[in-house]
Image 1: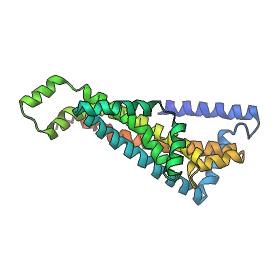
Image 2: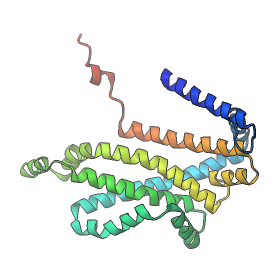
Image 3: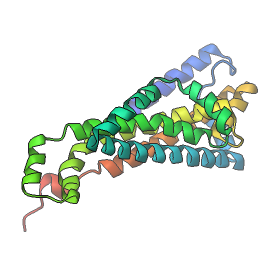
Image 4: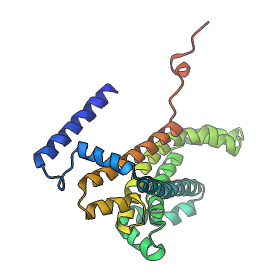
Length: 250
């Protein structure tokens, strides 16, 4: 932990030195100016409303994309026809630029639910492919053994599939958390829904308030990091000390 703090301090110092060398607030704001802008924005109700609106939409898209991706992968694992049917759609979703889909959603549905739909669009193929890969890698001998002993579907899911899926889901959810925020906020910058992080970024850019741009960016990074940590706690909780070191004998 101490090493991480030292590394972070070094990077902040380099950032500050670079800002002092440039000596132009429009081109590059330093960490001190960014922190000052962040504190100023935090005193405004609109800042917290923007965070709430953006979080609600992006988390909604993240949840929808995750659930649909996992369920679709489970169906594709069970039914070959569904896997073959979804393969072209997943390939297209991976290849289509996010900006193209943003424009299409703006034409079809407007900007109110833009970040929700974009987040779901980005998250779905990540969860789908990772879940499907995890299911495909399940040990066939264990599955045959389960059939021999007539294990129930619930028991198979709990004791065979979930342990196998855990690392795949952990990796996919961590990646999806960051990608959903990046794509969702980028969509807001393009679509400009009022009272949102994307709208705040755009207004800061129009008024050449570079410190505000950095402040909004720091806000987005912190939100993404918090969600990622929550996912880690849920998907990979730290084992209890007794489980790691053994319980003390009386």
